[in-house]
Length: 226
Image 1 (cartoon, rainbow, N blue to C red):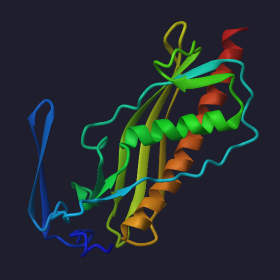
Image 2: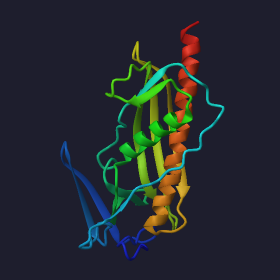
Image 3: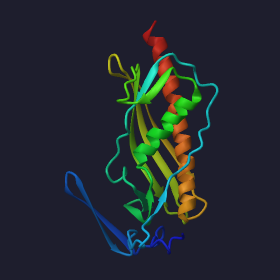
């Protein structure tokens, strides 16, 4: 699927325009002029993409004897959507007309971070918040960016930015906080290539967050139990 086939003549083209307007507290209206990215969807509907991230575990992560719960990541409605966000220029945020996510970005991130922690074998117990785990720490994440960003280039870059906070559950205070940013250039403008770039970015940022949570929590434990 190239940019013309998907009505996505973005990047250096200036024939698209977007006005973002909140009609109410819960409704986001996107008004696109001219040849915007929404375009027409085929009778078969949009193609659904499900990034399959690879987790690169680090054997140097500490072995911990505490438990962690992961809260569902927060994100603006325009980001945490099944529509795949694309930024043709710094001032514009649009969506691909003929492509959807299988899962919302927040759910993708939560599942991948959880898998990284479970597969590491480095933690006593980890689970989603609300599953009944007696957590010593809580991992909270805010998704700032989850978009295909052209940034003035002919080929987009999968860009994911997440702010993470590790809360010490007994006192509910912040044990550590950090912002993570990962960018992976796609090999072409085709949606399969863009999806693959997202898979790599998601795997890397989720691995970074998992390792940081283990290391930061264990450092807090050593200080807290002195």
